[in-house]
Length: 363
Image (cartoon, rainbow, N blue to C red):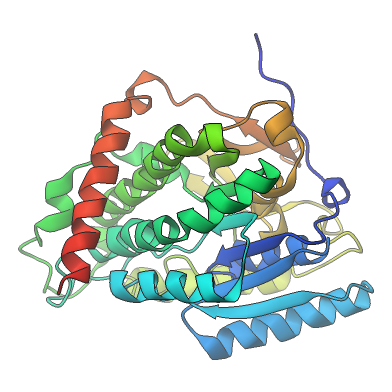
């Protein structure tokens, strides 16, 4: 049986009144746009971010946009630092004192290019992108399970990336625990390929975490999926502590292009001419990068669409579907193949992550 053709438009988002949502890394990029979509349909939205000042600034901008749309938005800052398992768990414990339900959890935050300095016992990208989220999300599971017992429709979205295909479908735990000999050398562009492979390992972990969450909780009314947002311009991914030369050049090119095409229409989805705005040469050919609001579309679909339970979409990897003009048409379920369906790998990651969290909390 073939999969149904999926579509998404902001007008498809149902009324979310009474629902509580939390989006990590929501002060910028696709997390910011996802928070906008959720709040614009009356959800209570928590922006879980490390920087209070940047989160509050983001909330001010969102409030202004939503006020113009005549929406009485409920937006709140929640402190979350994924770079520490202890603070990630503490953040989740704090959230449990704020709310009695959690209907939508989007594990969106991510970093690329962080240098493995001596204070890190584990590779910092993997630590932040997976282990921090693991500690945070698993601490929230009792609240999620409680909410699902009432609604049988809680959504967890673990944002991943096509970068997971740049590495083996088996997680290399040695690359996460053994600091490379050249880690203290000055950063240079030649290390980019190695860093992208390690980044891919973290994104693979995001997928396997979603699949194991789905395996454990799907019968309880928790719908877990992992989307690749597409190649998106205007995010800050790769611009924090990145390679000196790579970060310098990338930041200026991306910022220039993002500002150049910063055009909005009333529905927030379509610029004046094309949905896609910059052409980059990639190993698989020419890839067009999307506007931020389109990068947020697939994870917003998974967080809100009634199609998810209707079509039984769970434990899946999804990515944007484009037409021949590369216009966003909606999400699509992608079969990555048998190597990614190994339940032993999912379970091994969960157990390994539990041990790391236990060890870190005991320090």
